[in-house]
Amino acid sequence: MIGRRDFMEMKTQHERGVYKKDIAARLGVSPRTVSRALAREAEPPGKRPAARGSILDPYKPFINAELAAGVWNAQVIYLKLKEVGYEGCYTLVKRYVSPKRELAPDKATVRFETLPGVQMQSDWASHPVLIAGEPYVVHFCVNILGCSRRFHFTITDSEDAENTCEAQQRAFAHFGGATREVLVDNQKVAVVEHEVEEGKTEKLVFNKTWLDFLAHYGSRGKACRPYRAQTKGKVERTVGYIKQHFFCLHPEAESLADYNNKAEKWLADVADKRVHGTTGRVVSEMFAEEADKLLALPPLPFDTSYVEWRVVSWDALVEVRGNRYSVPDEFCGKKLMVRIGLDGILRVLDGERVVATHALRSLDQGWSVVPGHHANLWAQALSVQKRPLSVYEGVTK
Image (cartoon, rainbow, N blue to C red; front, side):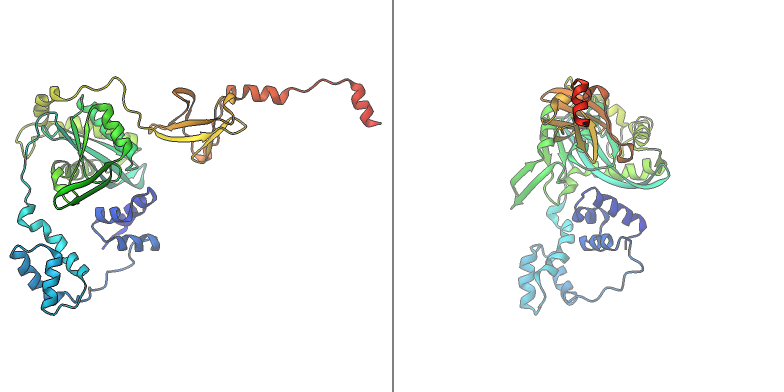
């Protein structure tokens, strides 16, 4: 059953555009539960009613026997059930078998150690906290080196491609170099499509923004096989470590920037100095052996800004997120690129040239206008043609 805190997380993620099925997966509930809670705009009012019996119940011992015998194909089991009198649908059988697949012998995952500088694993998670005294659900992107287990994480308010690139870029800067590949789960911010059939990858399409980011650092993307998130078990376990240690120590902060400052200090004072449970070694000491195997960072960081296009209005203003910002009046009527940085800085570009820069403003702060941008417009508006007084005298007669 979901509680108040779970509902707050549902609502926050839904407002940020996260799919209901992804919200449900994170909270361990069904998509229908998420839909009902959002429609009700509150958590369930009372205890969940006792579950009704299923038509499948009498046949579950039969299914368990098939699984024990090595039959894991739900369709095959369904056909066998029909032969012994089952009259229900295939979907019930599939839902019963699917969670048990992790018990199949071929699901055992063999641990392997990554060579130095080869791989960084990346994943998103969320956690309820207090920001300036108010309840808030933050999102954090965890990035861990596969060899030394040194990790970095960035706390933000959105799980999109731009924040993914920014978090991974900050991790590279923290490590002082990039890895040759970055392993992710199949979240849409990195993997647009991933189809697998009969154990072979049929189609794998990465998010273009993420591909551009990887190319900038000389890395390549790699995605886990669908439903095999344990492939990146190192980062999965690190997510739990951060929740159980960092967020327990720091349940609140004044702002997201304050939270990230706390995270940087905790990484240096605690996480880097710990003895890793698997390797039995101090993380910072292992990293010292991996550091020189990382790829050198490029001279300039990747631009993680949101990109939009706007036509400049007749009064030399562009509208962005409900507010208006000035540009030089020579660009009236022209289509310009707008880049909105994750640091809150808005830049307007004509080709590669920045023609205006503003701090992003909230609606109640009003427009952002640089007086010099409207110099020509004001000159035109204030210019009055000089006429002899006889012209006006003729009008009054």
